[in-house]
Length: 164
Image 1 (spheres, rainbow, N blue to C red):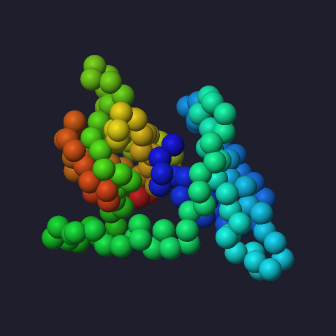
Image 2: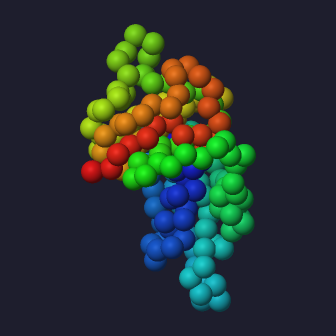
C-alpha cells in the first residue's frame, strides 16, 4: 500500500461517521481509528493510524490537516496539452515504472486495451517496494506515456485513458 492510498483512507474515515477502518493487502495491514469527542464537532483531529505488516502494530503519527494541501501544490509543469476527455493516470510517487510484474511477463496493459476500475495498470518501484498502480476509471488506454524501467516523478502522467 502506498502513502497516497493511505491518505485517501484517512480522508474517508475523517469525512464519514465510522469509528475505524481496517484494510489488508498483500500481507500488510492498515487500521485507522477515529476518536471523536463532543468538542471536536466531527472533525478528524482525533484520527490515529496504525500500520502492521506481519509484525506487531506500529503506531504512526496523525497526519496534520495541512498535509493534503501541500500534496496538491502544483508540480513544476511541462507544457500542458489539451487532453479533451482523456483521463490521466499519474504516478503517486517518485520511482521506477514497470509495465509488467516481471521482466519475462506480459505487460499489465497495452495500447487500446479496455480496462476497468481497480485494474492494475503498472508498478512503480520506490525504495525496493513494488507499488501496484490501479486505474481509477474504466475505459480504453489511448496513450502510454512512459517506457518500461524508466524513472518517474510524483504526479507524472503514466497513461491516458478514454473513459467509457
